[in-house]
Length: 453
Image 1 (cartoon, helix red, strand yellow):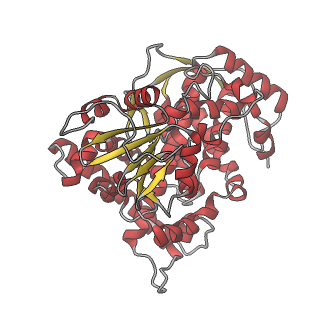
Image 2: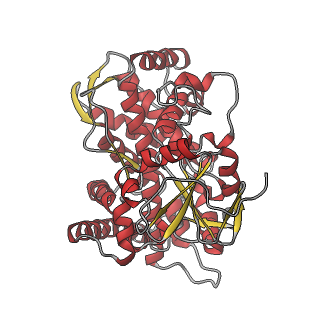
Image 3: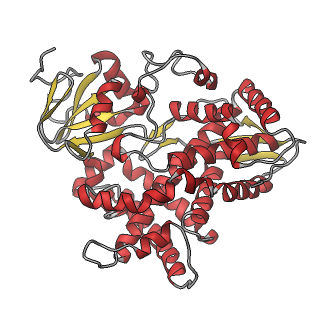
């Protein structure tokens, strides 16, 4: 097919504001309607930018493959709001500086490194479960966020800043409103409504203070440590100069940000979905009986918990922490049959593609068993951690943690929904539930879990 110089089809928008009203009111629904009504490449406008939405896995793959040559990270990462939070961390840098930062941090997330963290994961999960009531209610996303933060600080920062957990968790939750679409657009001139601006700045300041304390704690510790924080502290620029404390703060904030919501949210959604599906819970218990028996959890047995892995994959399919990945064209190029002018923003939406009926039967149904079915799907019909050079380094960390936690939890507790009301979603920097999600917990008489190396 010949290349088209025209703009891909899309909905009719306001002559000045484009599709701002529809998109800001319901981003997830708007993107799904664009893909359903206008095909594999559709387009829409927001103030100051033209967007192409790609929902064909082959086209998505081509854009991810060309990242760092034809495309860079999306423009939203260069707004004042993003710069205020992330500074010059790995999310906001490009080119050689991005490659340098990536090479520093990647070894800490290699499979061999992550496997050594399992003991900490199990230990912290046991402590969390020990604190749960025998019968009562818990706030599942709050529990999983605090658990993930404790594990991250123990494994990769070797810090036990338990007194700072509330400050860090609260700061990230307070940052959520600033990343809503309408506030991201307003932030180009920092013309945010005063309460939003104040709340956002206070949250960044609280996070900065917590990170400064983590750095100070390490600098005062004469012992040698083999962790990500030590790698960052000892890192040097190409000219031999050590990285500044400001740069170090940016790196740690970025790491905490991506780690918490890349791992905590899949845990929250997996637990939420298990609570609503008796058959899934029964299958999970049956697998544990087969794989673990009365034995203890180990890295080897975690790898054998295939059904538990399917639960996590299915939760990531339905509720991906990254609900849309974005790239910006830095040269005039093309995608499929369409020309892509320099400056065009491209969106590859996990929310859209991972619920596309072309690739998934009953796409809105939670069915872990689908992952055991024969047949193949295009690679980028499922990409919860992004793709290409900028894929999320913590994918293995998050998925191993999720299997450990849901398995240990199921062994000790039956989770049930405190309410069967549908959960409204807030698509901010992660896919948040609107409001508090409570689950009813009831302790089982089964043997407790422990870790055995």
